[in-house]
Amino acid sequence: MASTVSKQKTPAKRNNHNPPAAKPFLKWAGGKSQLIEKFQELYPAQLKQKKLKHFFEPFLGSGAVFFDIAQNYSIDSAYLYDINEELILTYRVIQQDVSGLLEFLYRYQKNYLKLDTKKRQQFFYDQRTNYNLQRFNIDYNTYSDRWFPRAAQLIFLNRTCYNGLYRVNSKGEFNAPAGDYVNPTICDEQNLLAVHRVLQLAEIKKADFRQVVSDLKAKSFVYFDPPYRPLSKTANFTAYSHQDFADTEQRQLAKLFKQLDTLGARVMLSNSDPKNHDPSDNFFDRLYRGYTITRVPAKRMINSNPKKRGAINEIVVTNYAIG
Ligand SMILES: C[S@@+](CC[C@H](N)C(=O)[O-])C[C@H]1O[C@@H](n2cnc3c(N)ncnc32)[C@H](O)[C@@H]1O
Image 1 (tube, helix red, strand yellow):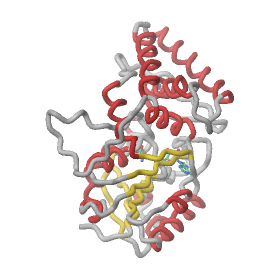
Image 2 (cartoon, protein in one colour):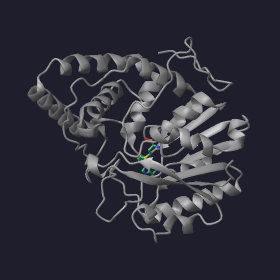
Image 3 (cartoon, rainbow, N blue to C red):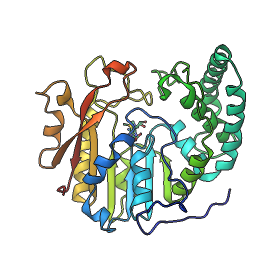
Image 4 (spheres, rainbow, N blue to C red):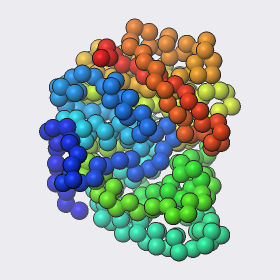
């Protein structure tokens, strides 16, 4: 689909004539949608003053911060990375050929919604098996027509699995069980079209977070949202991909944060606050000593047990003063 690049020059003012704003099209562990209003207070003043022109989000996930910044601030380009190749494939399909994707999604919607509960489960597990088998037949490096059904399958599974979350096991197999939503929206056409438009200013690639150094430009804002440091040794549920993100990686990320600071970028990083569970745990306070650390209340929606989803702090580190 041919797409026009519409770069916004002024913060989007919503009125009845504006098309609907794009929002995350996947539910993702650690998604930041519910924190956006608080984050807006923590963005650098230069972003609000339209002095920052490039945005980097190297742990993209569902991209809540990207969608906010691309639509409400005046950036010229965005660089979006994630190590998860399925996720990147899906973003690129929406960016390049949303109409091809919509066709597949409408087919899913029609075929799934007409089934009774038992048959829906069977349909879900058949798709899940097929999704896990087909990954060996996909060339993730070369865009092709085979990417549309793959992207549609990921969105279908995300919309219809239990809790609506992407989760893989150590072999990289998608393993979330079937959900029981009565009427899930499998094809949200309006939003996907809006996402398609917003993605025109983005370069999207499967990459490790360290890639940001090579691509960095003057006047950049970088937002890091790495996998959460597990709250406890047993809380091992953040499997977005089969690669681990341990304390070693958190330390490497802190090094990169400092490097970007020296290079003149504005940098913001969030993580769950280890002090929620162990008030003496100073891991991030030590790692980011000398930078501005703000704690904001959040609700963790990731726990599959609703009773365990309580108020909890998110820690936000910035290399600039707030306010
Ligand atoms: C906390 S999630 C980001 C959530 C996102 N901010 C949102 O609103 O949905 C972390 C993401 O980092 C990705 N990731 C894990 N290790 C990575 C690495 N080494 N480089 C880049 N991305 C990585 C995961 O695939 C996951 O999508």
